[in-house]
Length: 96
Image (cartoon, rainbow, N blue to C red; front, side, top):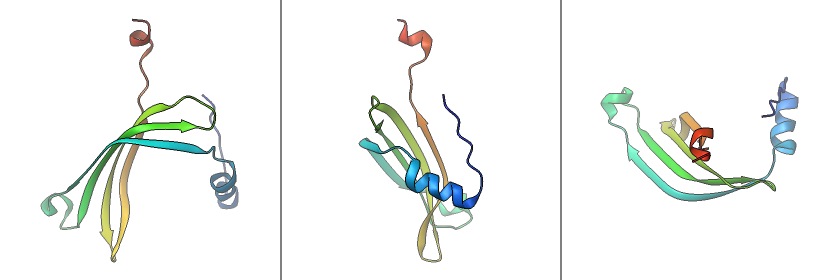
């Protein structure tokens, strides 16, 4: 695994806009549900779950799952929390 460290606002913006690899996403499932107002202090919030596959440039597709909370702030929807993970088989299950 390659870990890249980018420091400074200008360098981060350049990396995000010019150096991130291109991707192709395929969505296999999508679910969105309102969150009870009592659980989020009365804030209008929606829980979203997405699953599918992502392909980075010339590499093979990898399954992914992403969960996030959208919340309304000043009339605009914003991501309050999000988790993205690739779903890779473990070494043990790959050998079976």
